[in-house]
Image (tube, rainbow, N blue to C red; front, side, top):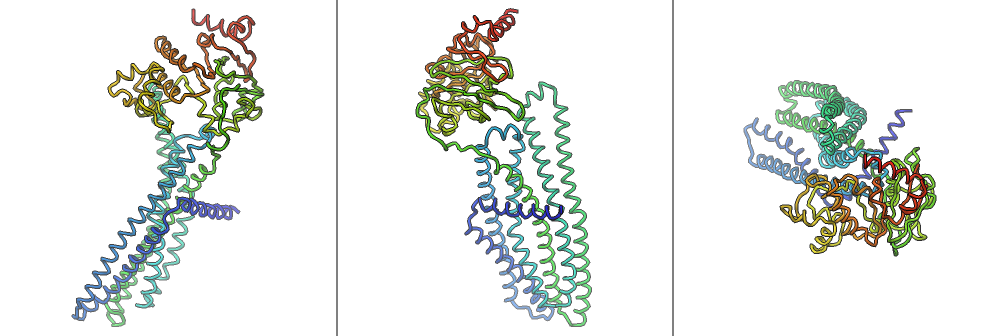
Length: 584
């Protein structure tokens, strides 16, 4: 039963692998040319031993002909030229296949929902795009056409050997079935080993990616020893699977070599006896041995091909996992015609798995006004932002703009309406210019760019930097201070000119001087926009037009600061607690 399931799995993987390669649309013309050139090179290689036979026989009889030497040289040159050209074309085709496959995967990964990244490590996904596609490239470039030429070489060599001497060929053919069984043995065991090796390599890549991306946390926490141990464990697992692969080769290859060498010894001994009796010429024996090697080498190529195909099938399964994931269609849906409407949550419910975050949350955000959301940690504030940004979809209830469910708008149109500034505004490795213009496809003049930076109170410090807007800021903007990073993020939001602005604790992690500058920049950004602010520091939201108080996933209070303070409710308690903390 298990064998039947394994066979079905392999059939599916064969089809999946073929489909994956086919979808990259390799040039049929180039593939055909590469095959033809490989075949010409193989045929030329098959001719060489035959001409060598004539050369040896002529040397033995003392009647050397210049013509046979010329034909032998021509066959060598023909084989070298066509083999070299076909190799180049195959490498080009393989690189083209993997480039298109990586483009497809990159596009797929960028279109996948945030929920995928919540449950899958970045390093594992990186390994699939880089390492697994490399396995498929190796198969296409080095092994697929080799299988065809190896088969032709084996069949052609055996046919010529039968013509030269059927008795010696019969001795050789007794070993072929044993070698085929050996190759099948490799194939059956290599699938599981190769798949396990790729999984462990992906886990190790994920560990390294995580450590390097959070290297400051590692060093600050004195976690070098912990991560070194994790790395050693990953290396040991990869090494273990690599050694399983090595054991299969170490067990089988010497046996196959021993068999072949035994056949060579028998053929040389038996052939030598027949040469001495005159039944076989010296040239025929030499040709027989050369053809024998033209069979031995392709057999080892076929063994390597089976290993490569098993690895590629394992890689296909892992890549298919990515390609089968649900994607976002950024363009499907209608355009946002009027963003100056009420944004409303109507009985919205949302949970991460079994953890319920929002429970029938209902509230309205008036257009052009400032709405603040406050509440204890875990009350659902950040999740509310994620739902507005459409990173997630509510399980129940709807979010509307006017009377339209926001799910009806295209993602591109909807997200174009939104500007987002968080407490740790993410920046990319690159220049300040690239960070401010990140994601914008339309060209922006330096004048507009500098105006946005000025409104964000970022222009003075930018102009003080060595290269101004073209200054490199390092990975995640590490060369800038927290306040500078925030103002770059605000300048980015100003350039986008959003209708709806989301501010998530935008000043909570700053010192008082930076906070003043960032708050001024935010005031410029919030002017005449629908703004939703998450804040723990109530002093930053007392002037909001509306304050929503959240607790346990629901909005329990709504009003202005003064109204909520009069009610002696949760907001009043939060304000009292914060006042005591700030004055203590």
